[in-house]
Length: 410
Image 1: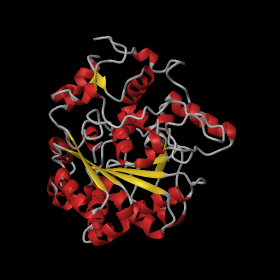
Image 2: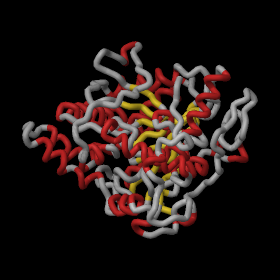
Image 3: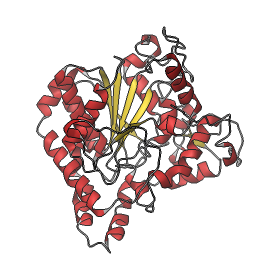
Image 4: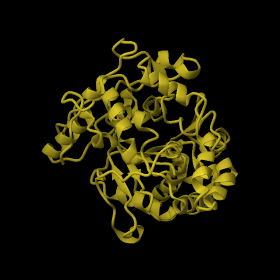
């Protein structure tokens, strides 16, 4: 998936010690599996998310905001879309599924794990799924299962470069060959896949951010910049080199078998998903998967499907700084628009009947900021710093300051 491009640069580090919960019930679990659902904003100590979680704890209630579950690419991490989480957090309670490198869950077991997690929800609030790459393939399978059972609050899905087209991809051609290499050649083979994932603007945008010349349009407050900095420092604990057996397993058991399950079910998808709004984000320069062609194919199958092409984005950059996913979701999912919101839809309202108060107001934006959208090349998606300074960003010493960091204690 998209985070795999970062894995290509990473070294082998111990796993982070902050996993919050572990599913261990039914046929979908075993001693070797440790699939978790975590709040990336709580993990990082993002103050608005922690304040809201503290309210829920003190009031003895579940979070009343709509629930957004992010299903990752085949790297199994929450790294790829991390810039988007704070803005998404103004609308949703954001959670993500993490799958460690030694996990050997099958495609159908992962489906069951997601469904079990949703079934454990105590409230009847709206649920949205966002799946990236492999996660997009898994999201389609989960949505089909949920909607056919008719026992669901699923209100919409977002598919980002969905790997429903894996069997027609360059990754399907090259990935198995790399997984079959001798151990001594495997790291070189993995590095050879890097060009499939990156785009021409990723590194130049990173330099603009590091030099404090500009910031992603969704990083527009000191708290968000501190969150971005803390996440960057934590990457060694989040990213691990993908072992050959893991690559082989995920290419075959997740992507190949997942595609085999979903292919040929177009009539079923058209019938079952007809009532569900679907947003497909496709990286314009995706070389890993034929993402643009697949988005158009899905739009022909699904009756309520909107496609958004992310300008200049490769596979790894589609959820990065060149998009405002929260704005696109507000635009395409009517329940999230301010004029349609009530206590069951959440977001723009300031307080719920149960006393829960929104910590960071939903701005209601339904498009990327004009300055970011009008930028060209490496400047697309970026804006001038929120504080007007040039060449001097937020000091890393402030990333964990009392004002910008709030530790979550359950």
